Image 1 (cartoon, rainbow, N blue to C red):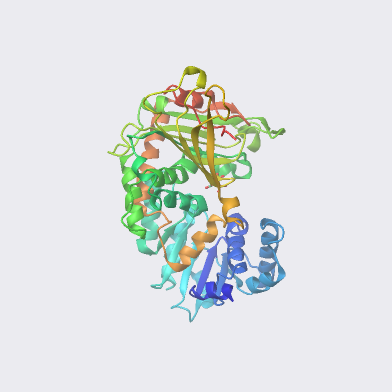
Image 2 (cartoon, rainbow, N blue to C red):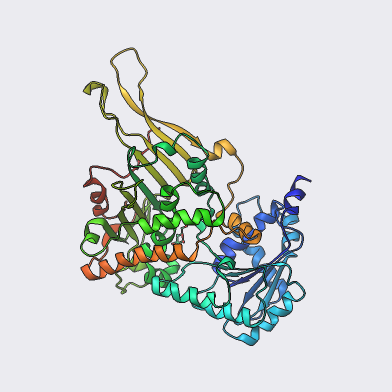
Length: 496
Ligand code: BG6
């Protein structure tokens, strides 16, 4: 009964997935929609129509989705009752996205449903975004309740991002366009806003007077593997920093928005992006580090190097690791460095934002009591989502005074129990409900490209190529030097 209530809140919808047989659809989108159905969050009248080149019967498509869901979902979360309900929603329509006449088949599938929320999800190569948008408009399929959802990469620089926006903007208004950055759908990213704006404790300290610096790390153990052809054109700066890391930086640094409405939050993020100090020319050698992994071992398992993953003979100057010392030129953050680092084939999968506060101005305790470590607030995005506040305490005992760093620990798993919903579940629901707050607006996207384009240009001008690092290490030693030069250290070990 209670489940039925959740479903009633959703409007009927048609979710049309271009690239419906592709990797993203199979690994993320369809399992996320299945989960939503499992939790009765989808209305009875909610259809999922996969679109792709090549013919396939509806039954064969359902079988493909069944296998994908059974593989992707954790054991015990795939059950027959949900599958019966979910599979009845699925349909398949053959469309060659570049052929205008082929869209007639999609028009037939959507006939009579112009008043129903219609989402076109483009899980395709970005070269197809423009042609698909114009063919949809040409076929008369863009209604007032239509949304267009785009997956990254949304360009490879500012110029290509503008070209994509111009191509889709000819057929869709900005309000209809939902640009996905899946980091914005992660539970802990939402929690970052709650931590800042639903607690009175932190906000007064959240500025240059009390904060020494901020670190944002997104570390992955995976390599590039089968995505080499895309990744080699992109590299870590475009793949991770331009979007996910800058979004995390924005949410950490932005001013409190006046409301949680779509434009209010995005306006504040945009101001942060516009305040980023440019990194250009010879500054790039001081403020950035590029790395590329070579063979090594992770968790005791040998792994190949980046170049060996694709072709033993290949040469490439693409970075799989990047560290950046960024600055935000505004009143709140002037002089406070934001150290960003992300890389593949690092020793563990760990994403976190660390806010380090200044050390107390005067140390009362004798040297024998031990050093005072500055307070750190660690917001852990994945895995083990939670928040830790590192603080100094007196070690127990009647003898000599000893200080020790301890942690106030809030584990979301222990506190809330249950399953933490995947980012796509939240984002897909928001698309259907027409809530754009967690999606990137065109001006944000362009401001982010403008900043990273300068770094790429500086790398090219200055001949800055990636330094090699062993898989299973924390990147090139220059990344350690980047922060240690300033008398600071990357956050690695928490006290237990
Ligand atoms: C994607 C990048 O956007 O994010 C990948 O293209 C990366 O290279 C992935 O692995 C990381 O996402 P998550 O959710 O696993 O941290």
